[in-house]
Every structure is written in C-alpha cells, then in structure tokens.
Length: 394
Image (tube, rainbow, N blue to C red):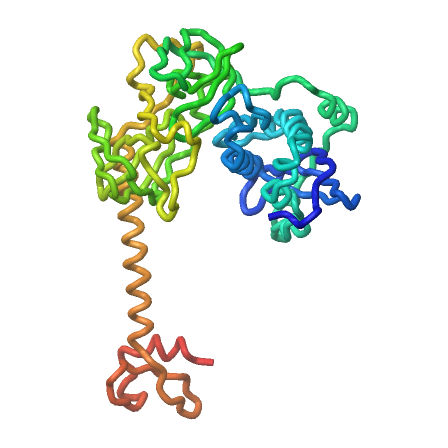
C-alpha cells in the first residue's frame, strides 16, 4: 500500500533507454512528481507496465468495463509484442504519455491507490541499474520537448495495433465480436489464451487471434522461439486431442510448455511426447489462481489457425510452421544432452568425493587415499594416485 497522504501530481515520459545487460532490452524513463514537490526518475519495462495495467483492471472491474463496457474509465493499454524492437518501443511513447495523463486524473480511489503509488516509487534498480563494466553502456533516447507537449495535449483515443481479418468469424456468445474477411480491427488486449479483445467502430468483443493478421507482415515475428528447456505448467482442464498433432491430457497432470504461440495453442511436452494443447486450460506451476481476464475463464478454447477454411492472407510470405516431428526430435536432443551433462557432473562429483587428503610428508604434496582404506606410504600408493598427488602440490 502507498504511504498515508502520499500521491502523485504528474507523470512525464522522458523517453526510453536501450540496455544490453543481462540481454538487450528497452526501458521507459518516467519523471514522477510527488505531492511534496519532489521529482524522481524511474525506469520500467513495457511488460511491467502492462502487468501493472492488468492488475489495476482486476482491482477495479467496474471502472475497467469488465462488468459493463460503457462504465469504463480506466484507459486502454495495447498488449506487448512477444519481441520488442526499437521501432515499437519508440512508437508507444505517445500512447504511454496519454495513458499516464489519464491515469493520474482518474478518481482518487484509483489514482492514489497503493498499487499505483508502489509501481511508480523509486526502486534500487532505478538508482543503480544492473550492468557489467565490459558490457556496452545503456543508450538513452529522449523525447523532444515539443513531442512531449504535443503528446500531453492529446485528448483522442490511445493508438492501438490494427489487424486484418483473414476469414469470416461468427461470434458464439455476447462477449465475442463477429468479423468479415478484410475487416480492420483495433486490438485492445492480447490474451495468451488466443482470444484478443478488439474494437471496430462501435463494436467491441473477443475475436480468436487465429483469424487476425497484422498489416505489415506475418505475425510470427511476435512469437517466442521454442524453449526446449520447458516451463512447468499444471493442467487445470482436461482435453482430448481432436487432431493428430494435438495431445490428450487429464486435469492435474504436470507438463512442460516448449513453445507459446499467438493463437493460444501451445506446444507442450509430456515425457517424450509433444503436441498442441489449449493454453487457457493450463496454469503455471506454483500459481494458486489462474491469471488473465475474468471474462475468459469460462470460455472454450479458440479455434486453431490450421482449422480456418478459406483463409486469405495479404502477405506473399507464407507463415512458417514447425512440425511436431521437429519439436519431438529437438526435444529429445535437448533432454539427451541434459542427461549426459548431468551424468558427467555426477561422475566428476563422485570422483572428487571418493578421495580424501592424507598427511603431508616433508618435501611432498598432499596425497589422497580412498575413504575407509588404511593409509599407505607414498612409495606404495603412488600408482593410481599420481595425478591426485600432482594436483595437490603447492
């Protein structure tokens, strides 16, 4: 919770930084002006900002429009791309400026709640960003003063990503939205479940991500690469495979997610078997409650992109797809290499623990003997222990 009587007067986006440790990423720089007239600079990743936004919506379901869209006063926030580029980071600046301006002018129960105050408080990393001396120093990109003023004066809607419908989709519930081929929609929220909240003129609702494509190119650039190390998830709803490349799982089973895809059908691994499974039926291991939008918790899995008939893309480059055979083969290679590495480490550990140092003789190094064996003079125990004796010379 925030400090009693503490509140934020103003939040100004200064620009962003390109950082190179522990890997290349971008952070936004905010100048936060507090009620006591102090000014602090804080740095936040866009993924952090989006998670903050989602939590704020859950805290205030009426004001976020979850109960009735017409009551929404909390501003929209476009979902993060799977991989951020400098261009997308730069293009979001006006959106974030408008978001912060609207946020601070919301009713006090929201704008001065502990969640907002805690998020914009100075953290240790804001004062001393993590870095290494041999790593390239961060590069700062400041918004021009004129741009900041223009962005602060914007009173129109926040800029959202525009997508095109690949095929006709007929809604199946009141919370969904129908689209026709070539329709252009603005994506308000991208859920990992594969259901995206969209708006088109006066219409709003959930649309399967599989039916949408970005205007500037195929969308697999937004998807993560396969992670054969896997993330542990628990099945919270069973599903029986309907296609050969899917996998059947029961409620309560623990599996590993190795590839998260935009259409909400993730590739999972159970022992040596891989297959597609609806992400909305999975829950990250260790989490007590499922995350995500309340409206989606009782929905069925969205359709898969491969199941869409008469799909018409405007892009010449076809969308790349990895076969389950490739997933299985690469998965097996990873697991085998991991087992081999563990075996080698265990072998080295047992070799080291097998020997213990013996007494040092004048002019000699430390000799080692097997645990439990009686000590022998160096002349008699030299064979088999020579390398260990040499290793102990000081």
